[in-house]
Image (cartoon, rainbow, N blue to C red; front, side, top):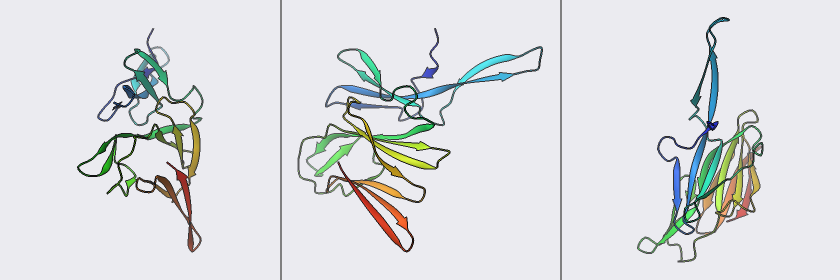
Length: 180
């Protein structure tokens, strides 16, 4: 039986976490298309690499997989990014992340244990809003912690261990801080 999801893709479709020996693999949806006329209909499917529909967590030692999001949990959202700490860089006094998107103030950071956290950004096309989710690296205790409305920005401030959201208001801004 063929899966309706494709577990491979282009660049940056997989990330490795050495702390727990986990592999995070992006899942891209399969799209079915019908072509032809009334008498010669053909059905074909292709992988839609324009958005990520889920993330598989592959436990390498146990050879088991789980999906980060349950079916229907994202309700019209797709995944934009996943961010997690990988290790402490003593020479540069900073935390190494799996990607650098939205990482700020990551200089002269005191050595500490690597956080057992995932930060996931999803996007709802119709609502034009992003959402931030936090869970442990196994995908448990996952919760949506913030809504990023159109025009607002966010970043992870490593030095202050804070996810900061800056939302414009009429002649002002609103700042929201979430513990990292």
